[in-house]
Length: 137
Image (tube, rainbow, N blue to C red; front, side, top):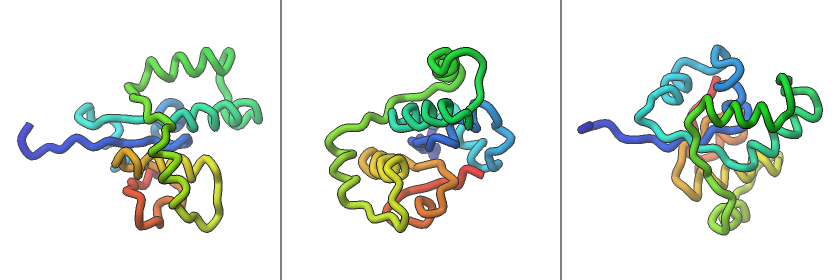
Protein backbone atom coordinates (compact mmCIF):
# COMPACT_ATOMS: atom_id res chain seq x y z
CA UNK A 1 0.00 0.00 0.00
CA UNK A 2 1.45 3.30 -1.02
CA UNK A 3 1.80 5.82 1.79
CA UNK A 4 1.21 3.28 4.54
CA UNK A 5 4.26 2.55 6.64
CA UNK A 6 4.49 -0.55 8.77
CA UNK A 7 5.14 0.32 12.38
CA UNK A 8 7.02 -2.04 14.67
CA UNK A 9 5.25 -1.85 18.02
CA UNK A 10 6.99 -3.26 21.07
CA UNK A 11 4.34 -3.91 23.72
CA UNK A 12 5.44 -3.38 27.27
CA UNK A 13 4.26 -5.95 29.77
CA UNK A 14 1.12 -4.16 30.95
CA UNK A 15 0.16 -3.14 27.41
CA UNK A 16 0.43 -6.78 26.32
CA UNK A 17 -1.69 -7.98 29.23
CA UNK A 18 -4.29 -5.25 28.64
CA UNK A 19 -4.46 -6.09 24.93
CA UNK A 20 -5.21 -9.69 25.90
CA UNK A 21 -7.33 -9.33 29.03
CA UNK A 22 -8.73 -5.79 29.18
CA UNK A 23 -8.50 -4.02 25.81
CA UNK A 24 -10.86 -1.32 27.10
CA UNK A 25 -7.96 -0.05 29.25
CA UNK A 26 -6.02 0.84 26.11
CA UNK A 27 -6.37 4.34 24.73
CA UNK A 28 -8.08 4.72 21.36
CA UNK A 29 -4.84 5.50 19.50
CA UNK A 30 -2.93 2.59 21.03
CA UNK A 31 -5.78 0.15 20.43
CA UNK A 32 -6.09 1.27 16.81
CA UNK A 33 -2.36 0.77 16.20
CA UNK A 34 -2.30 -2.63 17.95
CA UNK A 35 -5.35 -3.84 16.00
CA UNK A 36 -3.96 -2.56 12.67
CA UNK A 37 -2.90 -5.77 10.89
CA UNK A 38 -0.47 -3.68 8.84
CA UNK A 39 1.67 -3.10 11.93
CA UNK A 40 4.10 -5.62 13.37
CA UNK A 41 3.67 -6.44 17.06
CA UNK A 42 6.70 -7.44 19.11
CA UNK A 43 7.16 -8.82 22.61
CA UNK A 44 10.35 -9.06 24.61
CA UNK A 45 11.12 -12.19 26.63
CA UNK A 46 11.41 -9.75 29.55
CA UNK A 47 7.62 -9.29 29.42
CA UNK A 48 7.06 -13.03 29.79
CA UNK A 49 9.33 -13.01 32.83
CA UNK A 50 7.51 -9.97 34.28
CA UNK A 51 4.08 -11.51 33.60
CA UNK A 52 5.17 -14.67 35.39
CA UNK A 53 6.17 -12.64 38.44
CA UNK A 54 2.83 -10.80 38.31
CA UNK A 55 1.11 -14.19 38.22
CA UNK A 56 3.10 -15.47 41.19
CA UNK A 57 2.15 -12.37 43.19
CA UNK A 58 -1.49 -12.81 42.06
CA UNK A 59 -1.50 -9.45 40.27
CA UNK A 60 -2.20 -11.34 37.04
CA UNK A 61 -5.10 -13.67 37.56
CA UNK A 62 -5.83 -16.45 35.09
CA UNK A 63 -7.44 -19.86 34.88
CA UNK A 64 -5.11 -22.83 34.86
CA UNK A 65 -1.34 -22.61 35.04
CA UNK A 66 0.76 -19.71 33.88
CA UNK A 67 2.03 -21.88 31.02
CA UNK A 68 -1.55 -22.52 29.86
CA UNK A 69 -2.28 -18.79 30.02
CA UNK A 70 0.90 -18.06 28.07
CA UNK A 71 0.06 -20.60 25.36
CA UNK A 72 -3.40 -19.06 24.97
CA UNK A 73 -1.91 -15.55 24.93
CA UNK A 74 0.41 -16.44 22.06
CA UNK A 75 -2.48 -17.88 20.09
CA UNK A 76 -4.75 -14.86 20.54
CA UNK A 77 -2.35 -12.04 19.60
CA UNK A 78 0.06 -12.19 16.63
CA UNK A 79 3.41 -11.39 18.22
CA UNK A 80 6.97 -11.60 17.01
CA UNK A 81 9.90 -12.03 19.35
CA UNK A 82 12.06 -9.01 20.08
CA UNK A 83 15.00 -10.98 21.46
CA UNK A 84 17.33 -10.01 24.23
CA UNK A 85 20.67 -9.98 22.42
CA UNK A 86 24.05 -8.22 22.40
CA UNK A 87 22.63 -5.10 20.72
CA UNK A 88 19.96 -4.76 23.40
CA UNK A 89 22.49 -5.29 26.19
CA UNK A 90 24.73 -2.65 24.65
CA UNK A 91 21.87 -0.13 24.43
CA UNK A 92 20.95 -0.87 28.05
CA UNK A 93 24.38 0.36 29.14
CA UNK A 94 23.67 3.77 27.55
CA UNK A 95 20.19 4.53 28.88
CA UNK A 96 19.76 6.64 31.98
CA UNK A 97 16.39 6.42 33.73
CA UNK A 98 15.54 8.52 36.80
CA UNK A 99 14.30 5.45 38.65
CA UNK A 100 16.07 2.43 37.19
CA UNK A 101 13.86 -0.62 36.82
CA UNK A 102 15.48 -3.57 35.07
CA UNK A 103 12.33 -4.41 33.12
CA UNK A 104 11.85 -0.83 31.90
CA UNK A 105 15.52 -0.51 31.08
CA UNK A 106 15.57 -3.68 28.97
CA UNK A 107 12.32 -2.82 27.18
CA UNK A 108 13.64 0.65 26.37
CA UNK A 109 16.91 -0.82 25.11
CA UNK A 110 15.00 -3.32 22.98
CA UNK A 111 12.90 -0.57 21.40
CA UNK A 112 16.00 1.47 20.60
CA UNK A 113 18.06 -1.47 19.31
CA UNK A 114 15.34 -2.63 16.91
CA UNK A 115 13.89 0.78 16.03
CA UNK A 116 10.48 -0.12 17.46
CA UNK A 117 7.90 2.14 19.05
CA UNK A 118 7.40 1.18 22.70
CA UNK A 119 3.71 1.11 23.66
CA UNK A 120 3.71 1.91 27.37
CA UNK A 121 2.20 3.82 30.26
CA UNK A 122 5.55 4.26 31.98
CA UNK A 123 6.04 7.99 32.58
CA UNK A 124 9.84 7.82 32.58
CA UNK A 125 9.80 5.86 29.32
CA UNK A 126 7.32 8.21 27.66
CA UNK A 127 9.48 11.19 28.68
CA UNK A 128 12.80 9.75 27.53
CA UNK A 129 14.01 11.54 24.38
CA UNK A 130 15.86 8.53 22.92
CA UNK A 131 12.86 6.17 22.97
CA UNK A 132 10.10 6.23 20.35
CA UNK A 133 6.91 5.74 22.34
CA UNK A 134 3.15 5.54 22.03
CA UNK A 135 1.05 6.12 25.14
CA UNK A 136 -0.91 2.94 25.89
CA UNK A 137 -3.73 4.47 27.90
